[in-house]
Length: 220
Ligand code: DX5
Ligand code: ZN
Image 1 (cartoon, rainbow, N blue to C red):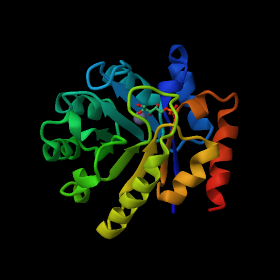
Image 2: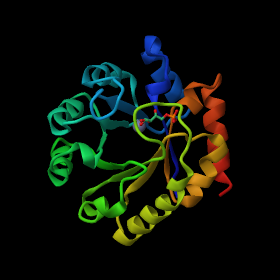
Image 3: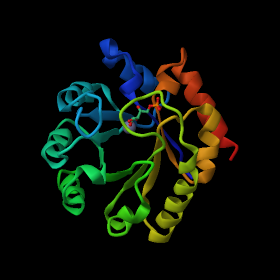
């Protein structure tokens, strides 16, 4: 199993965003997780394609764009042009989920579907075979620094089973409240990609924190 650590720059120092993005890559980030919030689908407002495009020249790893916006389709091509590798969205925010998945693919990006803690797995019934990533929220979206919702653990296992049955290489990412102390448990449940915002950017030493996370994954 390949494990990936995706620091969420939502918890970075926005006054020094370029430096922060460089530092977290130097510290061993596999992806840069980019949280887009619109004060409409979620009650917070963050960054748009302009910020993504400005950071792109500094980023050597894939940019993992997590859209928490409604509508979704209007903004997808803008993020593709801004340098996104993966674009994930919430099915509740799209009028036509299949169309949005196809649009992300047509724009040259890898599509991901995001399930909130209360979103049933049924949304994967006619979509999984078209996805490259499933992102399971382990907090309700909108803010960094929230508590991991443990009832998501069996859901991770259920999605891992579905991915295995599909026979496709679909990444299973978990987002919200992930830290060194619980990363092994989340991996054991079936996740392979871990978003961590406050756990990394809230630490003094980013590299030591990512090393600690990897060490706990290495013994599984
Ligand atoms: C929440 C965002 C997360 C957030 C995670 O809506 O999608 O990516 O940054 O932050 P932590 O790791 O602090 O829970
Ligand atoms: Zn996110």
